[in-house]
Image (tube, rainbow, N blue to C red; front, top):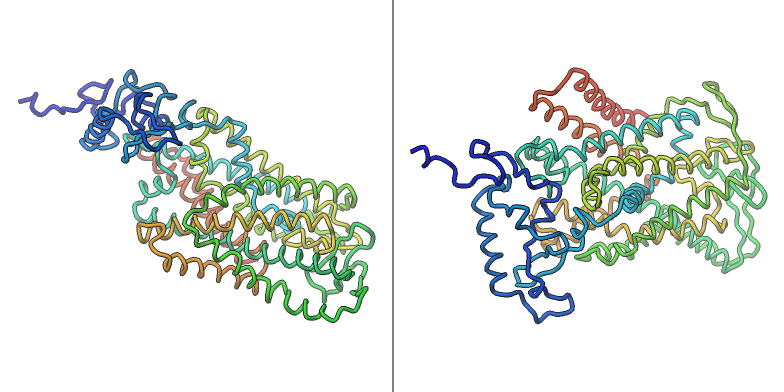
Length: 559
């Protein structure tokens, strides 16, 4: 009788008393690479050869393995082929239901195909977004010294929380989590609430980024059109705002009606063009240009696949490199203008510490935000044991880039004659539209954002429609309604609240509350508690992280 109740399926390498133990011959991280069915080289189908098919023997074996996989749960490795049967990584192929087999290059050298250098660069490139344009403004809001300290501390805090996200899958026992993403981990611990709340906060980050993009694209398109019109018609126009004289002009466009210390430069026209007034009426940054973008971007959002736009990702790297060059050149020409006053106000300078510092923490929460996709990025790392090291190096480089751009713009801003309070939420607005270097920067960023915007829209569509309807493209009607709603929010914000610093800090603090502060800390505490390893020090530390995230969000609405 005892033999009748013994399980028929016993994990390979384990004994009968330990049925739930994972197959120790399999590393969970390379399990996904070993899943594809092995096909003999004679049965391989070339990409350019549609006529050949795999052999009947290979097809039958594949069906047999699929049948066996249904006999037990994924956590049970009893029917997983042992290592001595599994072919070498370079001989593993994916078998298609149509009867074709294709080689998986990504598994040819381990779990992924990217070196550590490529992985670090990918993370750096992914995090480098529109937030970089608001870092100088954030430093101004916090104070020069306080801003440096906050960037350093926020970098460390978000890195630790990102590390907790990366390790969250490995703390789930007796379950194959090799294909899981962080939302899957949230669903495992918090059920449907974790799934839907994760979806909500993820959409907040995506739609917030799309709104920021629309505001910036309206800004860049307006200034680009203005530069081209003035150049073609030989019109020399200088806005009625405080600004510096000379070849390296810096302006203070924030509040033209306010008497800001500086040289007043009046508007004048070198030619009396009768169409100039009409151009200004039809080419307005807040009234017309945001509407013109609809004709360009709404059709692009309805594409079923964003693969075409993904080819232009290199523009993001080019844009950041150009911004670094732009900032370096401007700082070299303008020189440094700094005075240190810890608490007292000054006409031209801001104190080293300001109570408005939470505005910088809100911006930095989004600036360092990669937590919802870090697992995906690091899956392709060929050296999985270096994931933590590579992630730390990437965060260091991102923080260094933010510090470099933010500190140089803040230090080089000419005070006097202008006050540091003039630093705009988009620091390119501190340079006139006829500045050639800023014109080129706006062109680079405009084309980059036009190609990235459909990708963000695609991700929002996949997450929302995929969860609600189970289909990322249920119909053109569903997709069109969603895209019109998203575009409508962007247009409204560009027309009535074109403050990218505010939008970034609100959306960053909101989505960061879940993905950066709360979920990683809660999941770690719960997993330690289940293992009986939770200590009071660990509990207090992670509760403090959660409270900091909540305070960060609340403070955005009090400033």
